[in-house]
Length: 371
Image 1 (cartoon, rainbow, N blue to C red):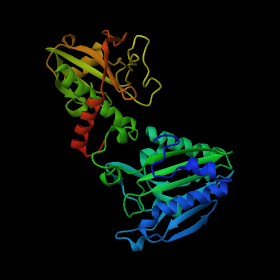
Image 2: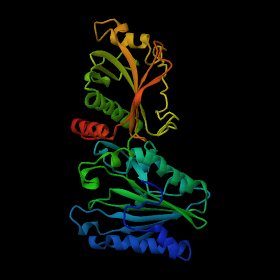
Image 3: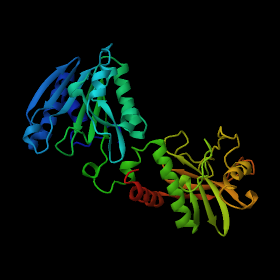
Image 4: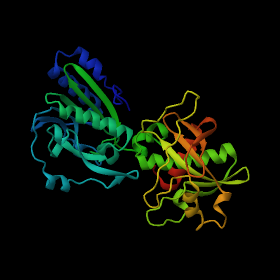
């Protein structure tokens, strides 16, 4: 996903260059949307609701298992919008999830930009709708920029992978003063919509912090096993007991005959993502003090409380390290810390983790069926 990238075969920038103004632009986009649907025997209606207009395909009955659906929605954003009909929204039927990902009742034209209900509603990937993923952040940026500037032409062209009204993707655009920003956003991650298997290029930009955090831990484990010939004793919450709100150690492994406890710090959306020092290292990790006990991550007291109920050894026999997994740089690097979990220092150089991340993604998909 990215501004200016469109997946449906429509070149919106070329249409804008040829159009004499917003009305001609919308008419040309509508014609292109119709052409893209010709093979599906559509019956098009143009519906107006509030400040928005919808190009609606009412020929779902002509397709096996077909549903009527919106193929283009556009609006010039108003200075004010009508109150939200929460009862209608709650009653709009959608599946709970698709490919293991939760869904929301979404709006093609956001309520903040004057959108209402009926043809404006659809089943939307929750992380996308709420801005919880990288793609979601960009999607919300386009929505919010249009809503914040009345008079902006905002449009959404859903694309479909089957005969249902559940979009596989969304072409989104916002035009103001002759400047057009567009983006393509995936809305479905099932095999029929993205192909099987979906790789990092599809799933990582759509991952929430919890999802890419789990991928980071599994990537670290794969790297330890494949690059350092380590033996994983415990990974994440799979084996470690929990004590109230206490956060468990991420990985315990035997490395070179020594027992090592690893804290894994995964970066993807943070300001440090992709940054390197002048010496060519990843930026040093920040180790928190969990509220449950106030001990800094990676410190001997922090490890001791977590190890004593799991391993019958003295905590001083266990070395603490931090593994930084940076999905922006696609690199992994070890850091040592002192007994108080401070002064992180790089151990060796950063290593590529792309192959290990693909291995980790495969393990997660095999285990869960989704990221």
